[in-house]
Image (spheres, rainbow, N blue to C red):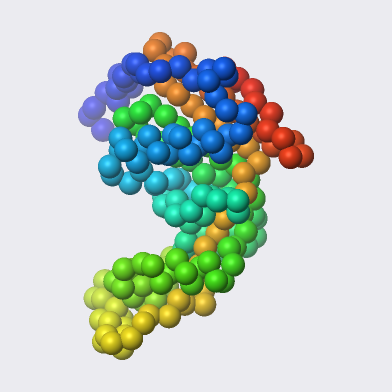
Length: 213
């Protein structure tokens, strides 16, 4: 690489993240920040990095989309036989990271993941565009494919099969929900004196702390 990437930086000029103006429940702050992101960041504001650990204690990360935030937790949908599905079956601990550069904000959420109900998975699957349904059915996610053409051929065959009917939700496809145990909010500030507020769940109460940047 011929570029000097060590000199790439910017200063952050955004509002403070202070205890006095932050709710005692981090879910309220999360919802506010997500609403801000949806309004200000038109490209994938619900994108989040999902980090998992495999049976050899090696970490893995990829970007997925948040689809629900309710009493069950933070939910996304995928193929249960994918690499992340296999890793979550072996280790239910995971981390979600949101980053909105234009707002200089990051949220990191740690907790345990479980599958959502089959009814919830089927309900969400039925709401997806038909092309997405067909792609989920055609793809053996994370498995090696012989060629792009072979994948398209399978998609086309399924498209003809279900041309006049509903695509059923595959048995190996559905949702996961992360139940948060720890949430950290990061707000970029000038001179790298960033604001970091952490919330740790103790029994049924959230303990809030300020962390050094």
